[in-house]
Image 1: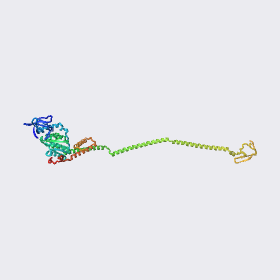
Image 2 (image 1 turned 90 degrees about the vertical axis):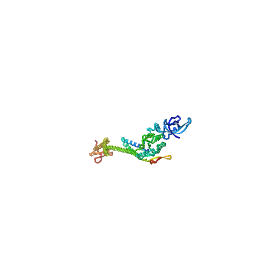
Image 3 (image 1 turned 30 degrees about the vertical axis):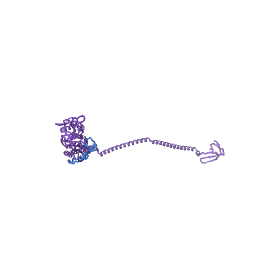
Image 4 (image 1 turned 60 degrees about the horizontal axis):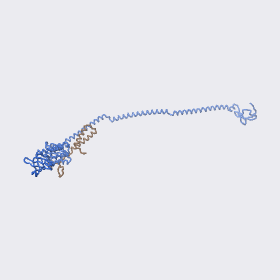
Length: 426
Length: 77
């Protein structure tokens, strides 16, 4: 194994996938082949840069010497190619940049936003030197209570790409890291090689934690700068982008808080004024109650009046009814009937009296007449009654007598028996 | 409840303030917004004071990678 430098010419790639070319310099040349396995791997390990071989490109190859028997020629079996010189590096850079850009790795839509207030940031850089010191200084000055996790990585040399990729992975695995600063100081294009590495670029692209790249000088751009979510001109600037100034945030929060309080006070004041305005037009409860009381009193009066009226009316109704009742009363009839009965009774009584009187008078008259007719009266006047004996028959005809017979003579006072001694004829 | 992100809380706070100052809120809503605003501003202030503070460095310990206090340039991997 040895390394050979030269310029590529007669480059061709048959369908076999092997790559054939001639490596030459000003005075010599030799055929070279990169077999498919090696070519497919593109094992350009030292810088990790992928590039296409082109005629005229200066390269350095790692190779073994072998003999191509059909032609009896020596040839190089190349397993590693690296570009040589600034032109080639630049070329490789441009090629990779173009390819990744075409793939969309630099697209703005893939850029992740930075957290306003990260609790913990990750830093991928060399743990020694000015870069880490600058970042720590700036970060601590801005936000003293920030957590910082350093993932150390070599930032140049052959091991750098793997270490950088590993550092990205470790910071994801550590947990709590909310933004990553990937930083490196200035250097030559060659020094920047790890950050122009395709695998590094893809690792940055895949990262879920936003990455700020601050690689080299402000004017140098690496592939990492393009893929990263944000690019900072210097490590210090990266720290400023990643870490907010605590005092500023505190002031902002304070201002919001004050705004909140002020606004709320204003709101309350406004509402209080409104309330007072309304309250002023609102009658006091006492007055309200007074009013109500008056209302109630008036109402009661009305009710009272109404009920009085009602009573009056009822009374009138009753009176009218009573009157009608009185008119309809049977008492009159009863009285009349009673009067009639009484009259009748009186009549009856009167009639009775009259009758008795009459009868008495008639009787008296009768008696008187009787008296006058009475034989006693006749007798008193001197007449006597003669009855025949023993029959007692009153004698009205003397012829019925016979001398010698006895007769009974009755006088007004007493009587006597006499013997007929003579008889007269009429 | 998942921890609210600082900027989300701050954004919400700003939104609440805009709403409040819009003046279309009822008293009830305004009080609610105010409470929420106070909560958010407290949350933001707390988040701002939350101390992680440590500066650590990831070091390989056998197969594992562990975080150790970073004491400056002296500690090198």
